[in-house]
Structure formats: C-alpha cells, structure tokens
Image 1 (tube, one colour):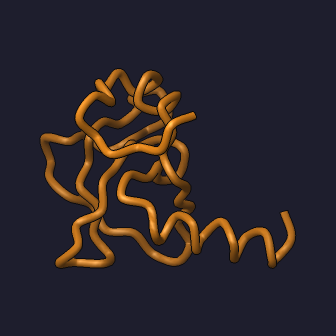
Image 2 (spheres, one colour):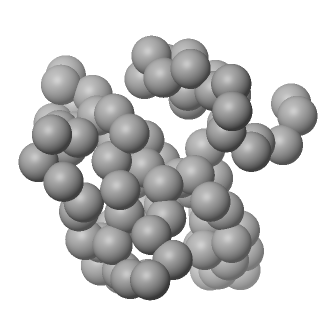
Length: 87
C-alpha cells in the first residue's frame, strides 16, 4: 500500500461509524471524543479489546478500516440495526 492509498484508507475510516481497530477489535466511533472508540467485540485469538473494559483510545500508529457485514459476522455481532452500507 502506497502513501496515497494509506491516506485514502484513513479518510474512509475516519468517516465510518463502525470500524475495525488493528484487525482485532470491532468498534464504533464516539462522536464527543474523536480519539476514543467504543468496543463492540474483540478477538481473543488476536489480542482484541474486551467490551466490558469500556472504550479504547487509538493513536496515529493504529490501523483503522471501515467495518463490513463480514466483520460483524466474524466478531459474532448481529449487524441488524446498525447503519452499514449494503455489500
């Protein structure tokens, strides 16, 4: 991935309401705090965050991408009721 693709990916992720953090945690954006994410579910196998421990912060070193329906399935979260684009 080159710098332009990385920048475009971060822009898309910054606009997404639901994101995957570092490929191990399904999160939602907290509008009042732009550097915090609420945790919907985390992968134990990939050292994901536990939703019981509350929101997590992210830094520029973190990888964010827009969540898909497949991510909701993978993290075993029902996507019904979440505003996701159709895929």
